[in-house]
Length: 491
Image (tube, rainbow, N blue to C red; front, side, top):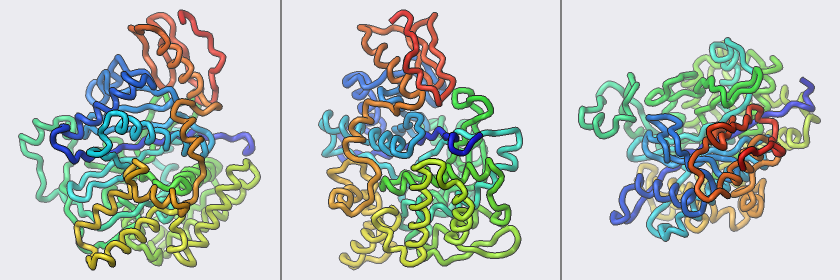
């Protein structure tokens, strides 16, 4: 495939936390149901599933596809709200679609009159409960039967070290232990979905030795690759799902990632990962960067905001995260000229590595962990607190509030202290308009047509097809095809 013609489908799923400050409103589970129902039933911004996508994890009525081509639903594990972007090719579409999902949720809270007492967060950790929430990246990549057994390990050095610009930062740390923790009978009965098919369960305890670190999820990653990820979280979760495949291309599901508030960091994370995958595909990723222990390196890098720590490579030598990233960037420069967007990623990648090398504090306008550190440390000094004070967790959390009227991050953005890659108008458009160059466009048009019916009694919407009725199924197999001119029998 000519490099100039090479495209990559990207989509990102974000799990949201919900905090309810008024007991009279019910539990968080009640609130996320209200948000979901309002978006689909009242605003009619999409089609609620009338069939079960999964009898355990996504039963009927748990969510559906939106007019913008994305998907909003409630995951039964933890009963949390989750938003998946539509299939995107450009980084601008990806970021705009992601922010559009947040804005839909905030809009629903405001119009339901809940915004004063309810907050929704795109953070990835519960400091006190020890839970961790995902922000999962999906890339369409060519795979063979050895991909997950061997090839994908070439991605580990990049994935482990990219947290120096993709990490969202966190106060404190966690230690995982299976020695003293076993769920009792009552816990299993009350939360059966949390424990079904789980053979390894652990407890989570505060690590008081850590003041601040780059990643919210590094402490919770136990495997390199794992298919059963509840209490067994991995860097990568293998998926072999037909609705994400086309030809020899399959879905690569990255579990180690966090939901960046900063648009620039979000775009750079996705853009550099796309380049790293091209390098693996073309067999140019340097083999001498393999890590001796990727999971240990993950935590060592996360716990060193100075970025000076060296991690051991498989050949016995040591290198810092910046040094590893620079070596990968050197090879990635071979893709310069493929696309304007690729050149932007290469330029920004180099600029960020230079900035982090010279002074990490200079990157506060584009890297979340740096911006958050400034906020938390300023508050700590002003109040005379030490790093172990619980009050710092509240500052950490409010950085991730997705409501611009409450969010500490959005306070920075509104004052012009952050780098942006999309405009407010781009986000507004993406609330109802899908990307114009993927199958999300055809899906969106079909959803709109079904919504125009008075009382649609049968339909099925999925990533790779839409059933208009029991006899007419529109195939959307190729994610690169827009299906904009698809015929619509029966509509």
